[in-house]
Length: 70
Image (cartoon, rainbow, N blue to C red; front, side, top):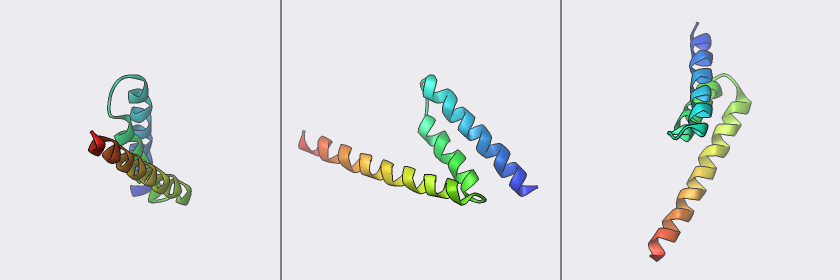
């Protein structure tokens, strides 16, 4: 039952992320939440979640450097 609820909520979060990718909104937050729900049961989703976390860390560090110059 718990796995089914996590799959349903993960799917909902991914669909909301897709919706907010078209309509202005917090799409990245919903994508990451969906990946988090799926990563509890699927190792491939855990790999994607790790990749997203690393990419966001790199982009935040890049933005920090750019904003610190100004």
